[in-house]
Length: 237
Image (cartoon, one colour):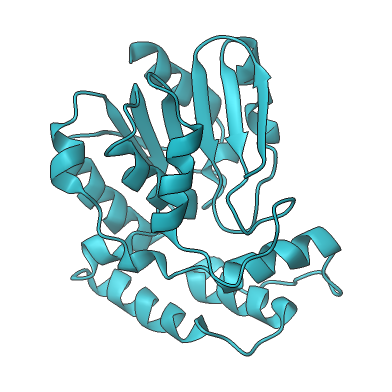
């Protein structure tokens, strides 16, 4: 698994969501005070392509990257991976942003409707470009004008997304996480009822802090004030 490390100071492991690792450009200023450890999840370039991607397997792979005392942050699908790994990873703190663990809130009508819309996408016979368009639109982001043709890196990342195990199948280890002594933070972007519902459940069942950062939709790491709120949490931990 490809891992990039920059900066100095306490280690913060950043786990990206579906669509591939972006190098976390908006978080680079944090490298002045923290060591940013940025793994690229298996199946996403520059790692070799895979026929199937599973959050449980990736959680075990993440344990090979984590060191005792690391801070751990996971965005979207990476948040599901982080929740699973943190239960046994000896972390110093855990923060997640809108993990699509919709199974924890499936009783919510908005969540149930979203899962019903998304489920037919896996497995798929679609090519990457129409798949990406369908994925974004069904997720609730509105009509999506995907670049045509997709740039090679984007196409490779979409092909990885196409073989991911549905994240709502994840069994979140609530008892272990709630009992763990490290602080938890759940972040949402105030743009989606289903994601809000999941974050509400995580906040209450984990005993977590909650941050709402509007302005960037699901890409919360780009929202105004994200770095400041994350740094505040890391320093308090």
